[in-house]
Length: 301
Image 1 (cartoon, one colour):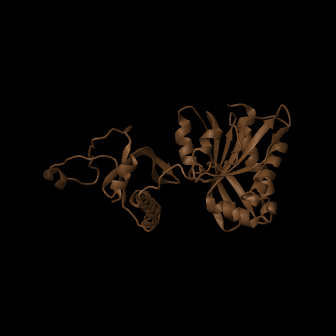
Image 2 (image 1 turned 135 degrees about the horizontal axis):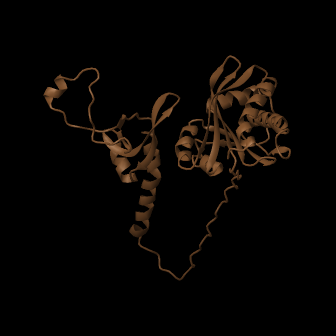
Image 3 (image 1 turned 90 degrees about the horizontal axis):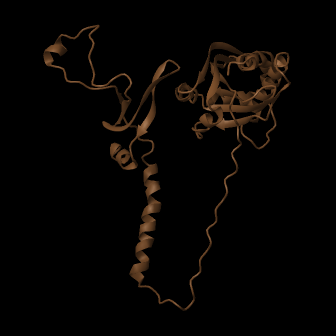
């Protein structure tokens, strides 16, 4: 993984951004490196869990003088603003302006890397992926190794945030095929071979069908109801005399080891379990286990 191209590709992309993005956006814009790391094997899952919080992904396949996939990750609202700033004609696909910008930046990086690459580097078409709707797509693209760069991002005076650049040397970008519509054959009943069924027998399934159709409408009324969500690291029983003696620096031992998953409680009932992650300086929980639908329904009742 640590070949010269893999190490320098992300740096070349950020340099190309700083040179080409201002003219495309029509305002000053910079990408400044904050941290860089290489991840492989068991560390991939946790690294991608953090990367998923940048939900707007732009993936570009790489060929000829380099391999894999380049992935640019932005916050969704910042991707919207970038797309708005760029006056690019639509092509029927989402984020035409932002995709045009990523393509321009990638071509600039390819030129900069031509002196160290064994052959001219070619970047393919840019694909936009909404990771909020396709959570598993990032892991499918990346494969078993990835080089990650975390950058501070500025666009004009409105955007001061962070962005990620990923280079997956073994990654593969497969465009999802359009979903096929399955049409069920229509069955016709013989005209005179069956006797009519009693009226009550026909009415019962119709009533059941009405109840099934009405259920989603009733659920929609509850979707905006806010519920208390608590992350529980562990519990213990402490005598009152120990509680009275507690002060700054007191350590309380819980009934859970550091490598065990924490519990996610909704309305006081356990809904799932997960591992603690840090996202933009805030704690979060990545769900690793979740209860069946019946238990989840009980948790919100």
